[in-house]
Amino acid sequence: MSTPLNHLSPLSVRERSACMCRHGFACSSFAAGHALHLIQARIASATPAEWTDAIVEHADAMSGDLIVRTLDGTAHALWNGAGAPLEAPAGTPIALHVRYGVLAVGRTQFNVAVS
Image 1 (cartoon, rainbow, N blue to C red):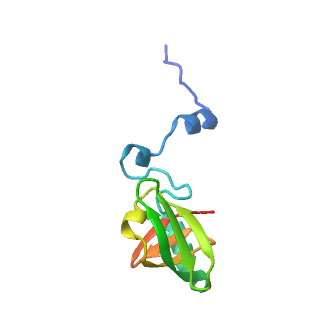
Image 2: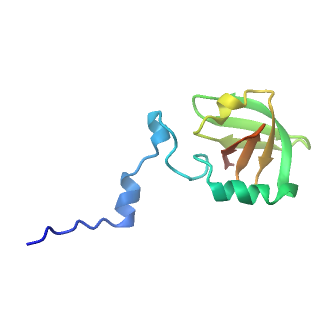
Image 3: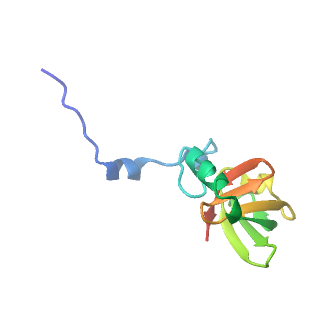
């Protein structure tokens, strides 16, 4: 007699999963604001005209929230759970790719949720 297989629907799996960054570990999700996916990084680098320079106005390492202002004066509220506020405190010059949600601090890139 064989053991019956437990088939879980994708919905129940998604409901049970939680990103490891909520528990102090490395991000295990590629959702906006979590780990940067290789394809996301490559597609952002393939569209260099869409990068814009900005300055960090506010960075809260506890909540992951950042507010950046582009050189034309536009403010963007961002969220990142992978440490971007620690790497980019207030006053740090950054580059932002709004279309693909990528924040670059020097050579380090982060996936950000843009609102």
